[in-house]
Image (cartoon, rainbow, N blue to C red; front, side, top):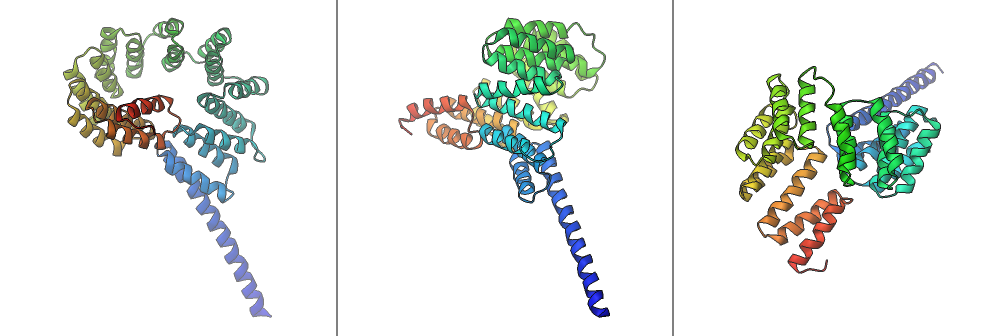
Length: 352
């Protein structure tokens, strides 16, 4: 009897150990997925979150993570499904529900499901405390739906909550996409009324002037930011010089950014654009190849898009078409590339 009791206790303890180990393994899978997402490895992250869902681990958070990764990969309908599953999970906190609703509205906007996006925005305004981000999101949706007064009201509230350079630029870019640049410029002008305090502020001011196409003032602000140690300013200086057709200085800035910055792939993309401007297409392809292994998903999208442009400029339409097909396998929701595909098919003479 004694031996049986000892065996039972041992088995129970072993079972507890296995459960703890399983929990630890699930936690590690979830944490790795979060890390992959933070680093821009969205496909790996999505797979990790899906594994967490299969394991029943942090279901709402795992669906949310998979949804964000799908958005970053351009799979908006998949993202909407993940976010909906997250909201349908049990015991979803109010803060998490607000976050997921915001993401679902953004995904619906990108997917062109404007009524669905606005419905989520209305839920956010009726059931949750609005903040700068939710006001901005509602403004974006309203603007896309041609509800200009509603958009203006929400953008103004967003900027009142968050008077940063980034917010001003985001609002400006939203108006710019709708060919309403003048409506967005006032936010850039408002941001410039703030006195710069540090290198980051000078860099942000340089970005604002860049968007306003005041390249001389942008260059002054960015040089000051760079002198104070802001490496991101080097990237924007490259963009400013490039806009001024000063390819030599642009190239120098991008090279400095690659050696000092946090996202070298952006620098390689800049160098590729310099090569394209000078007609050095072989060198441009080399820069693309150098940047791809170092890129996040967003950076990869820019690099792959420019790779297609390079083949087009070389009049190698067959290779450009093949690259475009591969691009759409990764970023299927890119409407610009779908239109590009039609052009390439016409040049190659296919009806695919």
